[in-house]
Image 1 (spheres, rainbow, N blue to C red):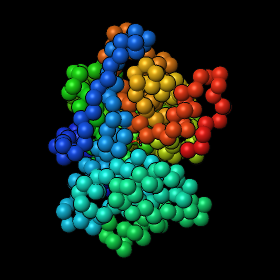
Image 2 (image 1 turned 90 degrees about the horizontal axis):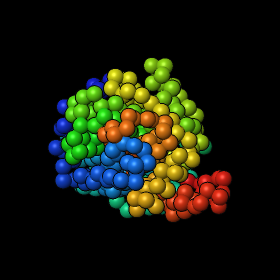
Image 3 (image 1 turned 180 degrees about the horizontal axis):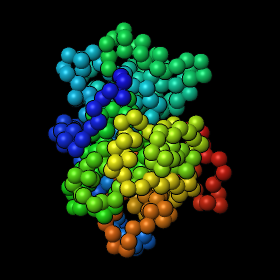
Length: 336
Ligand SMILES: *Cc1c(COP(=O)(O)O)cnc(C)c1O
């Protein structure tokens, strides 16, 4: 699909997505903590997307994009390229619509992720990333079956679906002064910014990236798409090379600022969630919380701050590594 030709989503699309996903996606809880508020001086409201279906917000956008297809087009199935949460989101959303899904994954993707995706009934097609292009493979599958490709972030219905996260949060807790959202390709951030502009005008929306993968931050500062190559970060959900053609203009129009945090801040956020709040999050899931904990964003005392916890899909080796005491933790993370 040529996303450059797609109309950008608006608040009306987010509102429509809310109706489509109702009953299919969880309305995830909002978590609060006196300890966190005392430590940061603000009133923090954490939107728990680690408790969403498939363990991340991606189910919202994937389900909405499939639901938006016409019945005839939908019946021919969907294709996605992903080794991460988008794969599982598309697999489960397709299963719920009773349609076939093909997920194209690199041969070096973790077996647990391949099995989880296959477990939702998707056909998993492996490709060798060193010799084959996933675009060619995906295009061939789409051509032979008539299936529709659903990209992970640069698609109007995916963006609108992700925006339901902020819409629910604001509806549940009331207007916010700040909203902190993690950012990979910017689907979640742009969708949430559309929702905040509508439901909590004046709320400062801030996108948070890993230091090593600051493509959207640099694009935000320069006003033009900037690229990074193979970002070295434990935030595997935010290792995207560049913002999308649809997401960047929305971010430029509605996002107040972009900040970055180092991997050590993601470890701190995951430890805080586990040890203080008794919740498991993945490294990428803690980007927004890390910005608050480290002071990368400094709201005024008493400000009402929404924080999106984006996902909880972490394997045992990575979780164990993050939870170790700083003095015991090996410098290199377990391979993901
Ligand atoms: C995909 C993902 C992100 C980044 O989302 P974008 O829409 O690409 O910005 C952040 N956190 C988790 C857990 C994800 O799966």
